[in-house]
Length: 502
Image: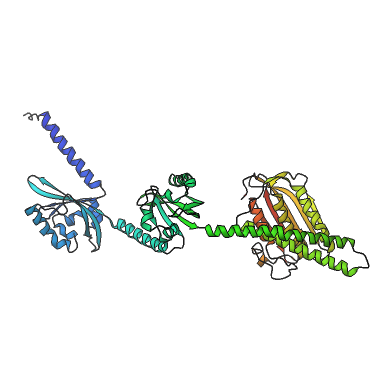
């Protein structure tokens, strides 16, 4: 007997239904959100794998039981009443809306859930499907962010420096110090449509470009110095730093601002004082030294007392001149006001000039001062005056710490390191040496060795040597053994260009 032929149309519909059913099952089983379907009396009829993972139950432990087993109090007691009220009145509290609720795991622990419920009818029966997500980690992150924000605000509110947060060229947050600095209330600043109103008109475009360069990733942070405006239009000098951050999930800038108007005024006063020292102090000192040296040269064998006084004046004057010069150089370095005057210099001739200045001093102590120059020393970019100052400080130290009859020598050569050529200037002596315990401290300003010092200096000489060398993008090395002498080596890159020095 032949099988009856099934109409093609019916076969296609059945295939579509089976396919749709399989797709739905695959989706429900694969999604990361929990999916629970219940009947109108609260009985669970569907509990997907994600729900198993969230609650810790196998589906067989839940299906056929009331869904309130997954709820802590008071949700458990209220659930049946809620469904009945909805079926009777149609008033919705969760259905089609969604809300945050509490879930109850198999181990008895409670946790937060985002729950959305939809209603459907299947074969005339009312059913409800809940889509839920465990938001425990989200809550932890939210709590951590709130705690972090609270700490930030606590620190910011009491800070002695202005702090701000910018987004869309508007102040989203300012601390009281910034508001006070500019003469506004906090509300007035955060209510501005454009924070650039606080920047001097001549600098607004530059400030805008700086903000954009941070937001578009060109810079993670920028230091700045400029002129802002107080509420009444008074200009003030401001220094600060701005850096990239996220605010409410979007790019923003967090920054600091410090009113340095008074500091800059005092700095200008200090520089005027230094200029006064340079002119009103160094000039007569130079005259004193010149005349003392002339008296020393003109001394006669019978005028021993006068000759001795002349030598004493000369030695003391030279020491005082070095102190003044060290003070001037270090003050400028320390304040950031010293910019090396980089130019092409004949290094050999510049160093020979320093040696000549110290020949007479070494002769007075019966010391031998020698110099050795490699034949291939090139002309290089450097600040001859500053390098001579650094070398002079090292030679002076060598004279001070080397006994009579000792030997001091300067050596200039070239070396190649890390793909670059360097001029290496070495100053060595046969003096007392530096104890190992003090070698890491000798470059600190105002530091003087604990013993063996014959110098009346202020402890600035080696600090200047280090600062000058680093200003040329180089470094200084020390090799010393107590009782055997010391060697200082200055490494100056030969490829330094004008404008590159710091």
